[in-house]
Amino acid sequence: MTGTEILNILLICVGSIASLAVIFGFGLAIASKVFAVDTDPRIDEVIEHLPGVNCGACGYAGCSAAAEAIVKGEAEADVCPVATGMAYKNIANIMGVEVAEKEPVVSVLLCSGGYKVSEKFEYNGVRDCNAAALVHGGPKSCSHGCIGLDSCVDVCPFDAITMGPDGLPEVVESICTGCGKCAEACPKNLFVIQPLKKGVHIRCSSPDKGAAVKKICDTGCIGCKKCEKICPVEAVTTENFLAKIDYNKCIACGKCVNECPQGTIASFRKARKAQVPVPSAEAVTSKDKAALPAGEVSA
Amino acid sequence: MGNLFAIIITITFVNNVVLSQFLGLCPFVNSSDKTDKSFGMGMAVTFVMTMASFVTYLLYTFLLKPDAKLLKVLFPDTEIARNGLQDVLQTATFILVIAALVQLVEIFMRKSLPGLYRSLGIFLPLITTNCAVLGVALLNTSYASRPLSLVEAVVQGFFAGIGFTVAMLLMSGVRERLDKLDVPEPLRGTPITFIATGLMALAFLGFAGMGT
Image 1: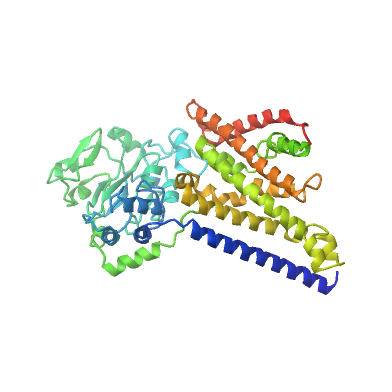
Image 2: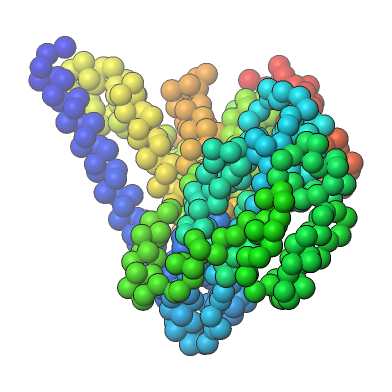
């Protein structure tokens, strides 16, 4: 085969593909004009203010589906549990309605065991909590506690959860939006979504008797009722050897944190104080934009 | 006429694209859970297959096959005209044709059948990479057991789509009943669908050897 022939093949390949593409391109352009669908321009505007991560926490198939529902009036302007305060205002402006300001929420892990809980066997299976939970409720001696195999870390659409040095997932509260994906993924139902300003949490979910808890876990709630007694507003009650905080009463004073002999109760007050004020308008809109580019559907 | 009849029976039942040749399993498994959805998917695939058969056949005859007419005019008595361009250009041009047709279907469907458009979702644009469509286009042209005429190619394309629709409808009937049954948990969803598909393919094996 000579040089000219190769050149000819090249030319005809490029030429034929290009001419085909031009023909189809024009055909499709005409078709899209003929079959044009009138969409509400507000849908695109609303999509711009949604986070664009398609997490599905609102109950719709993704951010564009949620935007459609908002514009149609099937959903409230604040249907997105993930968006920031400024985004709600923008969406409400587009729709011409008012929304009450939403309280920022975060996901809290109600277990402080991690490596402090002994193991009843060595688990060598798939690194997934739901898989491990099928085998005698997981390798930890405490059948209510965190298994620590990263299921919540994997599922978090915002990368807000990392596995900490103590074998427990740590929620980075400045990133967490309280979408609740981790709560769905956890086989032990250890995550609760709490308002950010409620700073004190009892990080244990075991209703076992105190002696049984003490035997297997260094930081579990033993039901000693010391927190109940010291609480100035009677927000803490103990049932089934497990203390519970009534957040309607709790003033986050932190007295129970110091009193707890097991160190089960943790305070996030100091870390959270800096976050609670709503950031300035520019900061939020620029964050909105940065979160946007996530594609529609990744096939 | 007898030829056409043989082609229709062969491509619809004996060589059914899904159940005998195992082409296009992705939309088959994913869109066959509801009867109306699978019918819509089948019609979309049938349309794309028929149009693609027509266009790719013309492309093949005029541009790609050995001694193609257009090549003969452009490059008389050269090796290009003698060998044709099917080795270099066939896949690229066929996929281009199919992609354009799928776009057309999508534009049309969004306007006229928005409900179906939403329920098919991502699987509508994925017809582009549906191997059944490309497979039929190839069966019409370079992989045909004997050279076909344009009418035969279009009929084969259309009835390959009908065969696909038949398989989808059968499967959706099975799956709508399966939903109500107490299937063992590990087999629920895709696994039981695959098993049912295998059993249906066994039934279609009964046609083997018939036709051409």
